Length: 69
Image 1 (cartoon, rainbow, N blue to C red):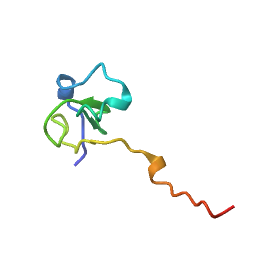
Image 2: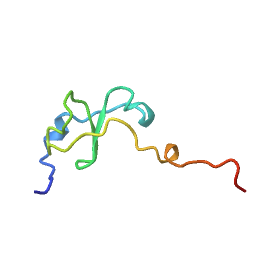
Image 3: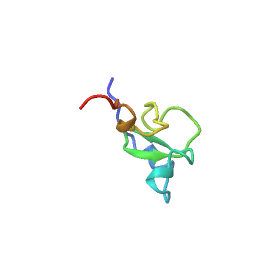
Image 4: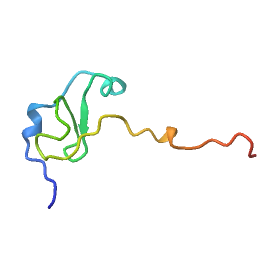
């Protein structure tokens, strides 16, 4: 079953906060709809996909080796 945006998420769409602060203010991102949402649930009210609650920071996943040159 494919996940599709039905346009309901426009009612929950958030505005007016800098990108760095969106997750800290409690906003969540729907990967399917492509917008930040202000809601209390875990799933998007539009497409029922699980919402992201923190940023995907690639730098934290890269391991640094100090001893190798």
